[in-house]
Image (cartoon, rainbow, N blue to C red; front, top):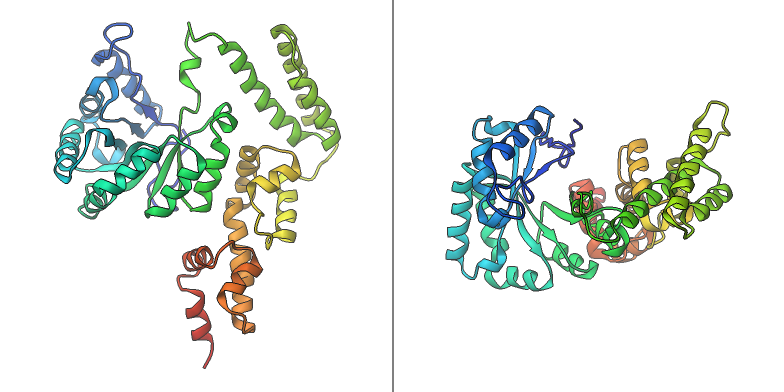
Length: 390
């Protein structure tokens, strides 16, 4: 099992988690959980190295929290990370929130939650968070040690997500992220907003589960093929010279009957195998090319993952992954470091005001510049200038 550090801390949950939204049930289509089969599933997950378990108040007709509490009770509390969610639609007052939160602790048989989310936040529920003081209530629970990390799951447009991120100091967010929603639900834009605000992303519906089981809705096979084509297209763009990659991707994604699509996918796999064979033409890695583009253009306010991926003709997800694997930081972290380093030089060696410096090095606003600068340097630009001068 692979594990990821949360914000460079000793919190290292498994990269794959077990969601408790669709557990085995006693009756087909029912909500009553089959404790024997579901418990065996949890035990197998633990044996496989899974340490992250996700549940919510309404799952399985309100029974999922009680199940996971019983299933995990035999394991040491420090051996797993438990996430659950606040049912905003059920709450109107501080008393409601207190009652439900305490009920969730009792259901899950724990004294604290490792990750706690405002559930299914959209524009309407964001307004409710503001109106009933939900964030402030949960921040108090965090201060009491009953919540370790506070976030939200999201289902709306990118503009709403940006407003939510800007409103409160969240610790993380959860997005529906997969090859279909990357464009259909504008998940790519949402992910980039989280990167901009430095928020770790927990991924839900990574496999679009309802389209994988037997008897899935009509059109499922086409959606599966589309996901495969997207994966192969990314690999072709990364492995081949630009002109050849464009040619192969056009052939791969051309409309045709299912058997023709499968044949073209097999051809794409053969091309990739050949490109990876010893003696294949060397090509400068995508991450190296991305770094060169950023180094030369980091002061462009539009510079970011989306712009670089467009220039290199690769997907955002592929570029983000390969860049971090190569350099140990995300693209936005690398850009911010370049901008802050340049800003420090201007602060120390010129009389430019802070707002002009922010614009010169590529920040869209001085407020954003100050926030990023303080995060990286542990002091504000004004403090640095004051300390550097007699």
